[in-house]
Image (cartoon, rainbow over all chains, first blue to last red):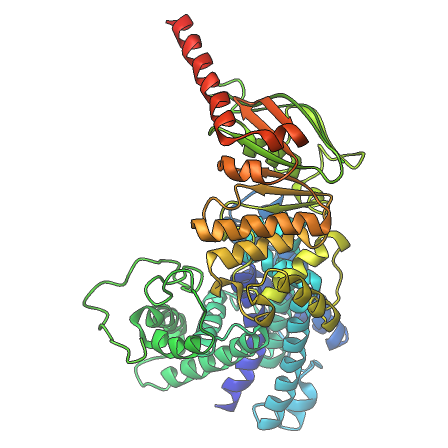
Length: 332
Length: 263
C-alpha cells in the first residue's frame, strides 16, 4: 500500500502537468504519453552513460519542455487542432524515444539513481520515502500555485478561461499556450524520469495510456474537493493521483484481475469518475458548499444549468430520465 | 489622439458574397472626445471598432493612436492602449477567476506582465477604491468568482477593467444591449461617470438613439460602411430622437429610389 502512495506522489507531478493543460489552459494535451517516456528514456540513458542522477533527471525534464513546445507550436503557429497536435507529437516521440534509448528497454541495475540512497537503506516503499516524496510534491505544488498567482500566471489562466477576454486585456494567448504546454510536459517528463529511477528501468511502452491516469487524478481530485481556490485544487489533484493508485492496487488484489488488466481498469475508473458527477452524487455534495458563497442574483440556476466547463465529459445535455433519481433538496 | 485614415474593409473579398463593411472611412477623435455611433445593422459600426482595436486588419488605410501607426499590430498589442467592453456581459471577464484576479489582469494590461504576484495588498486597495465608485457592493466581494455575478454586475466590472487603467481609447460595442432596461440605465450612467472621471477618449456603438444623444460630445451616423452624419457639441445637444429618425427615413428614401432605378 505504501508503494502505491509512493507511486501516487511520483505520478502526482504528472497529474499536476495534466491539470495545467486540461483544466487551467483548457487544452486536451495528448503529448504526455510521449513526453513521460522521453523524460524516463533521457534520464535512464544518461545515468547509464555515467551522468549524475540529478543532472540526468533535469535533462529529461528539459526534453519534456521541448516536446510541449513542439505541440504548442503546432497548435498556435500551425493552427492544428489541440488533440491532433498532441497526437502528432506523441507519435513522433515514440521514434525519438527509441533513438534516445537505442533499444526498447534500458535497465538501471547497478547504477546510482536518485533513489539509490533510499533503496540501499531499505527505506523505499516505507513512510520515509513517502515523507520525502511528499515534501518534494509540496514544493512543486507551492511553486505551481505561486506561478499561477503571478501576473503571467493569471494571464495563462485567463487564456484558458476566456480567450477573447485575455486578448482584449493585452495577453499574448499564443505565448501563454506555448508556456503552459512546455511547463506541463516538463512536469510530466520529470515524473517519468523519477518513475524510471524508482522502478529501475525505462521502457518504451511506459507512457502508453498515461493521459488516462492523469485525467483520472485530476477528475477524482477535483470531484472530491473543489472550492475554486487554486492551491486547494492543486493539492486535490495530487491526492487524486494517490487515490487513483490505491484504487488500481486494490482492484489488482481481486483474484481474477492480473497486471495486464491495468489499462482496462484505468479506463473504467475514468468513466466512473466522469459519470458520477452527472448522476447527482457529487452535485449534492458540491451544492452544499456552493450555497455558502451564494450569489445575490446568480446568472441562471446553477442546479438546473450545469456549467459545461465544470463537466469534464463536456456535454451539458441533461442526464437521461430514469438514470437520475430526482432529489428534492430540503434547502432548495 | 485617434486617427482613422481612409480605411476600407471588405469581408469575403473577390467572391459573390463580398461585403464591403467600411468604405474609405476617415475619422479623428481629439483627446477627451466621446463619440457615439449609430446606424442600422450592417452599417459597419462594429467593424470600425474592431479595426481600431486591431481585431480586423483594414484592406486599405491606417489607424493611428497617439501618433503611432497601429494598423499592423496584433490585437493584444493594441490592447495596451485600448480598453474594450463587449455586448455580451460574459465576454469581458474571466468566470473562474475572482474579481480581484480579473482586475489584476486588467491592471497589467498597460504595465506589462512579470513573475510578480498579481494581487498584492496595495493593488487590492486600488481595486476596492475603483469598485466603490460602482456602488454595487462589489468592493466587499473581491475574492468571489466572477461567474457568480449577474450579467449587469459583470458588465459593470468589464467597464471598470476597460477604463481604470486609463487607456488612450475606450471602445464600447453595444455594451448595454444585452441588459434589461434598468441595468442598461445603470451601465449607461456608470459609463458617463467613468469617462468623465478618467478623462477618457471613447467610442460607443449603440442602437439606442436616446443613449446616443445623452452621452458624449459627438455623434456619428453610419450607413452601408460610410459616415453619413456627424454632429458635434452644440448641434448634438440640440438634436432630438425625431431628428435622427428623419435622417434614417431619408436613407430609406434613397434605398427606395435605388431599387426603383434598378427595376
